[in-house]
Image (cartoon, rainbow, N blue to C red; front, side):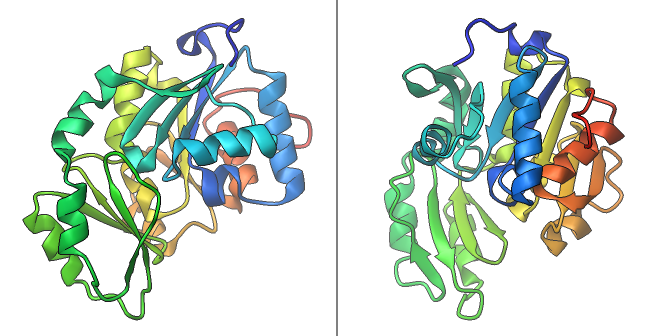
Length: 256
């Protein structure tokens, strides 16, 4: 989408951010300040979305809601690694090969094992390398976790609302590190941002990171003592700008 700009590895700073509650979080004014600052500095700021959302949702947000276009996407809780092009979001087969192999077309097995499980409602989106459920925390029976582990797969509960079944060893953290290495981005010029437990592996990956204000308490507890993480006071977009200043990654907009 930004073919005239320098390669992302040559830019001063790259933001690798979750969407819900993070890049999309905070006040209208805070989001406008963050988005406007990014757009005014595209030659020196790279943007990667690292989200549980699928590519169709990301495209709709950028096309219809005016969200800044990222150069790359780590979507579907780390099971999609893709480049954003003029034609849409194109998965990178070389980076996804390990994900596909670890998943081994497990969707039917997962859906059968968890059919009718208390507290889980299957999400209708046909994800490629994961199966996801809406979670009713009051009705949920944690035996679902053992069922998933028996299949040789990983599970993830986030925000007490979502239950994701993922390929073994695959999540946001390993996938963003794989993409950063592939692109040649210096690790000290990346900022990972998130707010729920599905961001834990990314925020604890060793890259500079921020847990924005109002993060899920379980995430904050899990990150206690991780020296590469800034715990922002401000929520959402303002928390991202707070961390950019704390790590001295880039000059900030006036008033930030």
